[in-house]
Image (cartoon, rainbow, N blue to C red; front, side):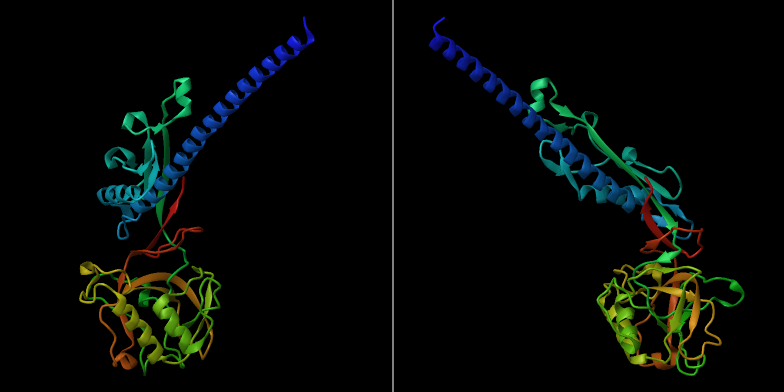
Length: 342
């Protein structure tokens, strides 16, 4: 064979192999696009499942410790709908609450979100269709639990009630009110049930005294405080001005300023105060350590006026869902927190 003809033939074969290689490489790259789409859909579905499960668990009834299932289904569906995941393109997630929301335990909610043929919304593939695979099913699930908290990590105010006499606990009816901070003439050696929290790296505040009382009353303390083993310093003095300013700022920021009973309240939570419960202030002379024995939530029933200097601060005890942690021994705080368990 003529050497020039041989060279042409070899070049032709080489071009053929290069073209074939490029075709295969393009197919693999295209397939990777489909794989990436499926993985993205899986991540989006998991985020939606997590959010929907936590929303469902927020329907815990703090009085019974049991989740209201009808309310949980509605909240889970609403939370899921705020998320999107790939189908052909990214579309809103819709779940069937009667099928996709389950209650494995009275205080747990499991939510499953789907992109499947059975629900008519599988993830549509593009390049994998050359292999006869037009779509693929993807699902994700999450389980959230509501537990009583033994650590509060956001929103703690710098004043605290003490345990009721006889350890009878707090009552939740509208006619029962409790002193969260005493007024003039009722202090214990200069202490009016105010607290001096340690410096916190989770907020932007750097101060003490009346300024700290003012700031933490309005915005809350943002670091975790643990139950039982935590001691905190008292903040001596009445501090009426800063305290009243902080409380009035919260009242004025609430969307419901007319209700005087928590059962009728429809506001945004500004009138709800998370507090420690202190073992006792008796014997605390000046700035001294006192022991936190519990946590509680109180509803401010009236906007404080000038009489607060004498009357102090009173509130209705409520059971509430709050930010915090439930790690550790079982608690009996009446405050519930939410976390993912699966």
